[in-house]
Image (cartoon, rainbow, N blue to C red; front, side, top):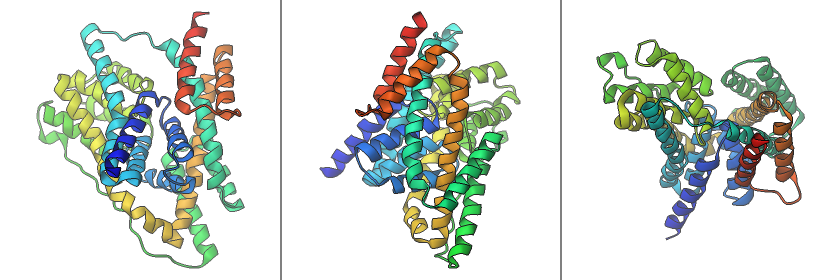
Length: 375
């Protein structure tokens, strides 16, 4: 009975987050931290950071994989699948509906008023998470210096994955030399499922599945990296035009949940309802498998003195990258008095005496964006 209750709790929470998690991975993780650590206390903030650091080391959408980790921690492998599916489902349904509108009518509904309110609200939520996670991640002055270094190179334009791995390696090597001790050996499992789409001559449902499975197995980074992969796989081969791909990426950025729901949109364009289903399965399936393999090994990483320094360094680097994302998003979002006002109100709601949950902050931001757009 307790197991069923936990699975039901996981399903409700991550379905709710899937409906309201706008703003990209940094915002998703911020909302997750608020729900899982602050409100429900399923795990400590330190352990949440460790999961976050480990997730950054494997391919796939980081925030979606974090939902799977949280589900696994709460209810084992069943929790992993329930959390991941419930988080993905709303985005897939919304994106699929928009894909149908796009194919049937050649246009999409006006979404600018809603984005106007979402973006400033997301900034406040990310800032709150950075503050809370940063307090736990920065354990000493060396990690503080490393964090500042990673923040600097991220703002300079260095790829976030390179910054994270470099931070982990530099920090891990430093703390290894400092402690002068070697912990237990550990090898991170990694497999790459690769099947060449060239073995299938036509753009069949099976080929759509293999194409997105291949992308999901090697995808690191943001939606822009996804754009590059899909451009190479689909546009270069003449299955999709570049404007169509850009529309699809835009929809993935606007809808709640993971940006990889873009796959649903493109799958529908390529193969109708069946194409949407297999594209979605293909791009998300590797994440479920990677997390299933990785999660049980995290306690070994935590116990190893060598890997503890590496993980601490990756955690600090991850927070620094979030801060860099916040800075870039702020420059892009806070462009007029309406967006600045919404950001100020949402910041007050997040940091005030009576702190509002991240979901309510998003809802209020959307309402304010629509109202101010009418003025």
